[in-house]
Image 1 (spheres, rainbow, N blue to C red):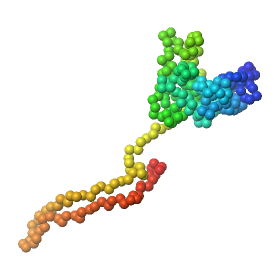
Image 2 (image 1 turned 30 degrees about the horizontal axis):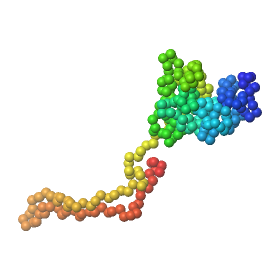
Image 3 (image 1 turned 180 degrees about the vertical axis):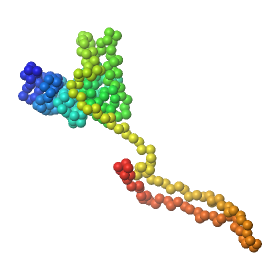
Length: 275
């Protein structure tokens, strides 16, 4: 840790030229010392992009990337940020927007198991289960209801016959990086360093099938009856000589439903539903 501490700069960052150095230093500080320096947290928050992302250099350009953003989420949670923290929320919204239909996250335009694995760890750090769509629906409600594929499903499809995980970077030479990072993402053992409390899934929207609960619904009175009611027969009883005995009861008066004269008065709010 002496080497890490020696790399701390006056602006709160560690190393120079790459944000990853600061983010990994924050994780190391939490693991070794139990606390992340406040200056480092302030520095990381200060270089976040407007869309919630971070880039590898910690600068305004180029655009943010999935790997750095996911690592930044882990670092902020390790520093004590909650899942409801504004910067964490914006980062998760960015990751939700970048999540592919096949379950992957991409790097340099190609679905990448490394990016997918580190993003999965960011979700776990923030208290979410990447196997479920809850995190996406909470971060980006506009995406709720869309099909969702778990990140692990994509990673598993990249495993080759020899056991390694294939990566777009294999073009530069096959190494163990994609495989080792995929294992970290699948097992989530020692990473993430800190995991927030499990977050509840947002309640799905419920359609109200009862039109009576809609104050904008106008109730139409039934049409008046055009058929005279059937006469009611009165039982015949023995009568004295000369008395007249009625055989039917007089018909009841006809009724007509009163029409709703505009403007109809809408129903008032239903206190059971809070509206």
